[in-house]
Amino acid sequence: MTVVYAIIVLGILIFVHELGHFLVAKLMGVSVEKFSLGFGPKLIGKQIGETEYLLSAFPLGGYVKMFGEGGFIEGGESHHPPVEDEHQTEQTAEPVLRELTDEEKSRSFAHKPPLARIAIVMAGPVFNLLFAWLIFMLLYTMGVPAVTTKIGEVLKDKPAAKAGIQKGDLLTSINNKPVKRWDEIAEGVTASKGQPLTIVVKRGGQDISYTITPEARVSKNLFGEKVNGYAIGVASAGEVVTEYFNPLQAIVKGTEQTWKVIDLTFMSLVKMMQRVVPMDSVGGPIMIAKMAGEQASAGVGSFLAFMALLSINLGVLNLLPVPVLDGGHLLFFFIELIFRRPVPQKVREYAQQIGMVLLLGLMVLAFYNDIIRYFVARQG
Image (cartoon, rainbow, N blue to C red; front, side, top):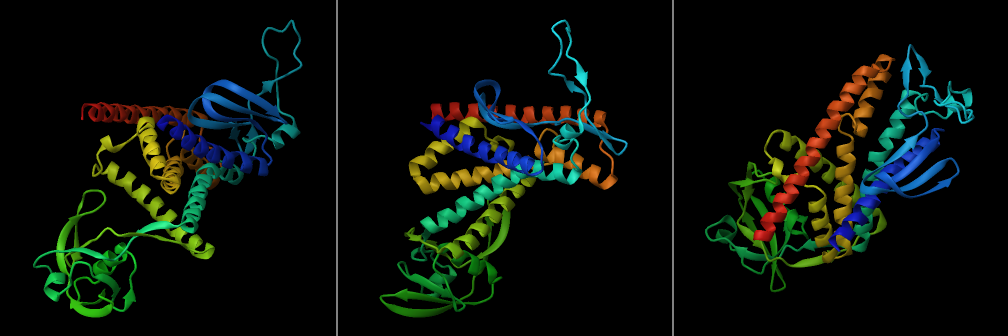
């Protein structure tokens, strides 16, 4: 079933991505010749209007083929390689090539101004980010799990223990600011910068106030780096409740969560380039399949959250200025917009080759890591 869940997740995310390109291309008046889920040999296809909709053999990607894609602009005037003439004679061994008509130029991707091409290419990643945003908003209306502020352990000789905090206390406010979730306690203590805090707990139906000065400590962040912080010496009881939000609150919370994940994704890429995050953390299809299965088993909410996380990763990665990715095309179009002339064809071709090598290298690394994890798990 893990494979099925992975295909569902990847299929939906690829569809959303390509739908972005497709809709904005149509909006810009570009003729779309093919819309494919997957790449490689065609499995099934249906022609509807000017577009052929395909399901292709390899489900790890997809594409939208637009008329005039791959064309070029020189000397301030748009050009496109000649196209095959459908009305060639039987005696003609080679296709008859012809220049584009004015009507065809109006529907050609290559003949659109840079801003239109930028909008079409950017639409794919943006749709992935918007899709994640919608999922997060939906999750907040469905209800999300939250760890309460009930204290499960008070560490000996730490500020909380010295002040009189006890196991089972429910922490209700920090410096007169109400707290309901455990992460709000951590935020409040960190924000203190070591200054005394007024902390109120509920014990046996009574509110008891304490003044506690957090102590400095060195801990590790999400990337394993040592960071300086503050703590009062308490641990959560692990009590979980479900929080529900109205639509307006869900929009705010969904926006905040989407931005947090986008920021975390960019930061992870930076940390990976700095070698803080090891390269063996990169995962491929096997890792995605495994995680998809685990999240599906955990429930609909976990599965949707995983899909949102993956959608943001797909959107962010595609915006990187690497040739063959959407970000690489955007880089060329922005250069054209600034200097009012396109990047020379040869330069683009070399860049595409380098980008392809980088992408293939990343894919090999991801597959290698997946295989190593698989065998380690089997031996364990």
